[in-house]
Image 1 (cartoon, helix red, strand yellow):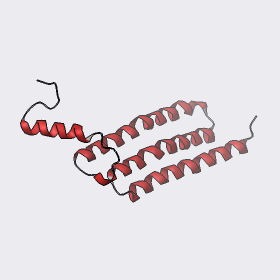
Image 2 (image 1 turned 90 degrees about the vertical axis):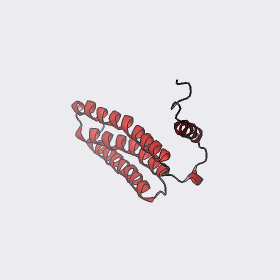
Image 3 (image 1 turned 180 degrees about the vertical axis):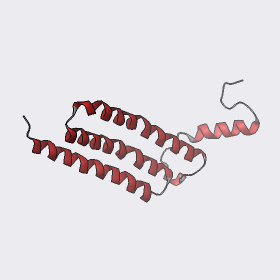
Image 4 (image 1 turned 90 degrees about the horizontal axis):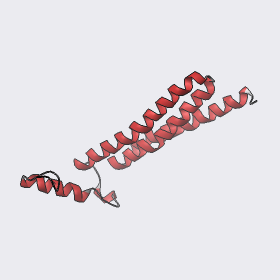
Length: 130
């Protein structure tokens, strides 16, 4: 059986690491220059940091009844954080709130240009629609 001191130490390490990942996400939001890099910074470390913090809470509380609630909270974060970052990034791209010089590959540029061209001509919004 694992002594309580080892479980407490593991929970402490997970709390510190999770907090550091969340801190790097917050610093990235403040320090990065444009919207796209900020969204990447907000989504990537935040999900892993949340997992570490929730695991630390589960270890520290030592209650199996808490596990479903912590799992639900993590799955909710796992599903909502990347999707919201994607939608904010896409909206920022469409409203030109980005530094185009920093883009390596612009896969969305042709699609947006076609839609804007079709909208100006008064035609359908998507190709193939009547």
